[in-house]
Length: 577
Image (tube, rainbow, N blue to C red; front, side, top):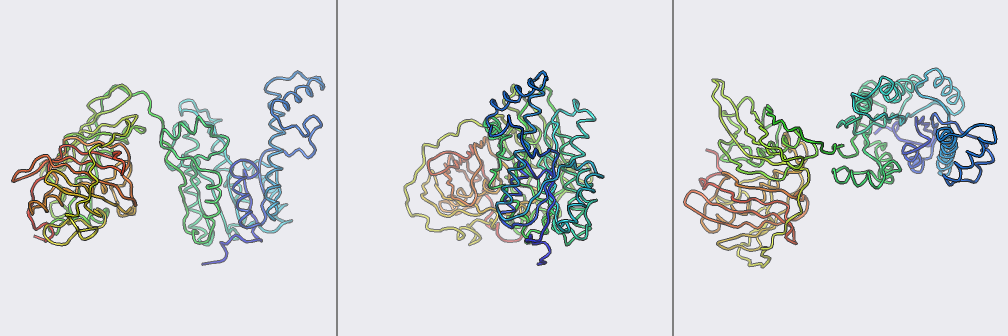
């Protein structure tokens, strides 16, 4: 570990936009962690001696009244705009002074320069003067930025320039003031809008994504510099009102608490993170669902599949060959339908059928196609899709693999309670945890990504109740089938108690065939226990039908699967053919 990237007392940071708002609070936290030298840049003018009418007046209404009286005494006619302009100057000046005081209180040194970072000549002149006085600049924190939120068709050239230049030209100008070889830290305040996009912020998204790419480029040119673009989400600051916070919560958007976010900046500047060039801290900005276009559309998504791209497949090997779990096929269908209409979430899947499984051997197709057909739009409340996964042979023959009808909704209904939970322990099945797996012909074949049943609470000819625990797996292991609202790995695990029931009473094993109806009301937890109550409806020589209720200790459902049909399979699923 090099000591060059350690923030130390001799470090000198230039901070654009650093005297006010969230950037100022981040700098104050950094100063608490390591007092050093901060040069704060901003466009606000500092009023050294406040006019008498403003002194010791902090109530907004009272101060504005005094401003009006002052303007009248000067022979001017006060207008709401002129009063607000004077008020903003006074308040901005006070905020700059307060930031300087808070930083200096930590033992750090801080000074403020009034300058526009888009004015390169003035910026170079003023930074050269301060650098000659305090020493070489070793770090840049670029937090300056402007907003002009509008739908793209309503944006003007001036809107774009205002937003773009503060971020992009501002960074270029700052870098022109510093010798890149002496730079030890470069921190760019980017946004999740650049990473995920956001309605009404096309210019802001472009500017921030350029910051992201600039960070990677700077790291290539100067590998010894600690470079990081932090893609911040929304902060719990004055800009986020209680009403806006509630709207964000309804859309599943997390807000960053100020004390948490400022500490995250400090953490990112630790030398152990010097190779993390881009960091996303915040939720995707999911737009609120709009009015649905009544037109029914069709989509086709092509995907190439491989074991290398999906490491979890090595935990789902049947007769020596990796096989795509039916729940992963379902997750592809579900997530694609959700992405067609952001803000709508999967609630229901009906008539899910395994037509021809996808096996990773010589039969693996060059690519697989997910066809999505919208079949109904119910006002703005829900959308119904028919989905099919298929492939084509080199000769042009079509193979159909999976099919299901998927419903996404704007609002998930109230979570139902499963009233028939049986918590009576009978100690009939004494097997626990990993002993259920790969432990004989009748044991479960699943590897770590799909484990584990921790214990069977009770079992009868009509039902089995089991406790399950799914430990989170890495995004790399999830590959092309990531966990979102729907977790294909935990759902697969939730169906495994039926295997235990079948093995116990009939010394047989089974594989999935189809699901009549399934619903999800909330995500299944990971790294925590959950419970499965499996009701066996019927059993024949070739298959069986059952219901699965996935719930917590109070019987509140995470998900339920109704009319699940399984096919009796050969006993040698563990063994290569």
